[in-house]
Image (cartoon, rainbow, N blue to C red; front, side, top):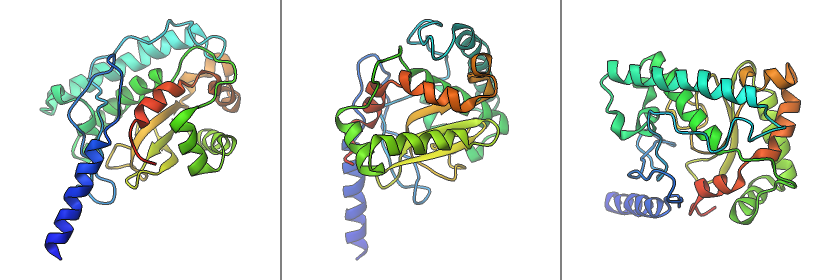
Length: 254
């Protein structure tokens, strides 16, 4: 029985690693990431790797007009997000973290690190992903292909998914994020996290590999939308980069 369980576990690891996300040449490739979901040493793999340095935006500050205004993008990227990158590197140096390994392994074990590392490491990771989750406004901006099929399977329809995800973002009390992620059973799920937490973290109530991130901190929308978070979220769907979400989902068999 013990041998059978060990072989089953090895088979699962092998299949999961083979299911690593396919990405374009423009994205960094790292060793598979092992992360806990059902217990501390269960497995998920990813070729996506986030370093500690801020990457250039994939568009200009005004590239998401008229959904997100240029001033908001400039302040958000050059002030808020830049501070997370700077502070995360400072925390990593102070705590003896090997930054060459990237953020993912650290976030998976964030409970072992300081609040400064959690807040700023999470903040940097979340924003680096958030920028890539958006592109210039699209007409009839809908998912296609595998990600569309996976959403329909998990939530019934895109409209049902969109409503649930939007409500999750709208109902996040205070500052935080809404996520579409793959859980340890390779199922699409929706959740929100407070502050700069994310589903990779071992402290998160809902754990998994994030596919789509929505920032609902006020500084992400307040200049244009003031207190109307719901309007920001409704308009945000026009700039979702479904090609990037599809890349992140990659070869996961859902």
